[in-house]
Length: 209
Image 1 (cartoon, rainbow, N blue to C red):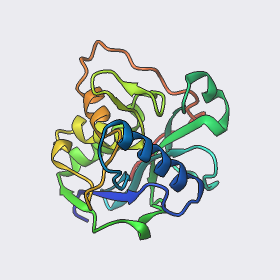
Image 2: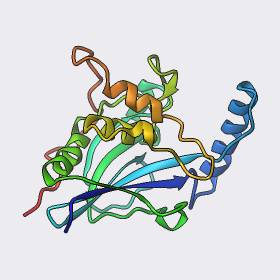
Image 3: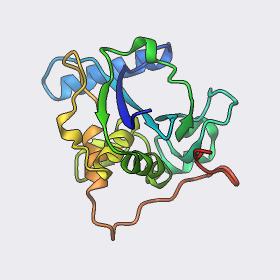
Image 4: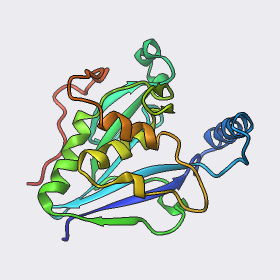
């Protein structure tokens, strides 16, 4: 199998009922504040193909997920850091071997394929365990943009020199958080990031056998 990364653009709220409405209201308020038209919102996810294995990499709410071993590497808080003690206010970052990309059927356009050597693909997969557990929804000062699921993906791509600045969501849409991930990845190494809230005990990313 050729080593590569597929970047998927998924409509925010696809397959759900609550998120699609809350995100639409959020975008309406943001557009009014910024004196522009509302635009479609997108959530990014990656599939990494390396060593004849496939990994789904994304950030999602911790609640409502399947019971399978999902390759969870980091968890973090949503909204306010103290709330992260409650599962309802936590997110998870995962590299799920042979995992499910639940909203794939709702994707707009085919994935963006980035071909790279096996060593680089492994490094990107392993970086999932190093992502800073910043608070989902809080702004990153350097970018005036929020930390969220899109920030995770652009952070990973930036770490591996894959130029996420050139990657844009389809259909004239927006990917809030994309700039935040780039900014955090480019911070000096002296800047300390919060550790994950609750790494599963003894859990490691799956590695090829």
